[in-house]
Image (tube, rainbow, N blue to C red; front, top):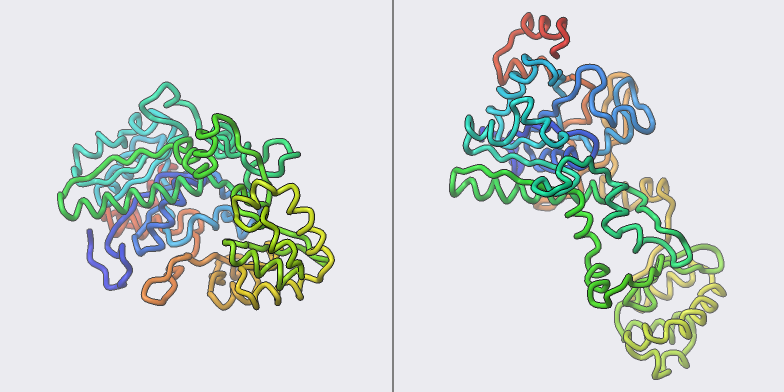
Length: 402
């Protein structure tokens, strides 16, 4: 590791991010948020696939790309060329961590597999992200978030009981895999401080997708069948979910029996419900959900949202509005927390970039680098780490290597 005065936890750690799309790049972004120097290697012409997904910003960026590539530098290298492969191999030897999500076997063909690099740098931490178990019969099968949401049972637990299977609104499997991968990298870095040895971390989208099923998954195993789908309601806690007031939806989370009694008496003016033996415990409310919930829905629908929120807050019951996405991002809460930043852009002038969610010692971790224009760091990185001068870089670019 190299020294750095930044004070960030991963200052001095260097990461070579060979991954693309979402899961691998999310891992790299997390490490970059904590202060690592992240070098993102991309194809010289098209870059990461997500540079062509969603709404365009400037000439080489999109909102999708920007959501997962802050705090990185972009270096363009054609990995189909022997010279490009050697450049990336040389970069890997200057790094602490390598992240890759190539199709099974491709990375070894390029001379960039774990065993190949470990032979040159034994303390390298190498994270391979794939769709499925790399030691099993599906090792070569491409993995995509949508596929795994279906195969891991996530679609089956999402949505209303009357709907067909429904995917999550965001690529949750990719995101969780990226986060799990970052956790594993951090653990390996910590271990390396004691042992001096590297690790090969292998993460599969299917494995991580199955973990997201959490308590739903364990209930399915316990019952030997799929649990019912409850949509915006909670499978175990009643009432807990999204409810319609007279003028709009709100979230109500009644977490215990004392809260339920206050909810019935002081919020919806129904002491009879509070004293009903069927509803005094959460297990009872769950068992008698069909009798209880219609009464609650009618009472909430008869009252304005503002009044309900005031009453709920007054008696200590968690509650909130249901906002639109734009409303949430521009809300006073988001602005006050510094969660959306404006970053400079050479073509667009400026662009919105989400801030890291982490706070350390009372301070939110910064966006040190906006999502990079394709290849913006090629000259500087290759000069700083490999000693290639401007003439050499220009020659490589002219021949399509960079």
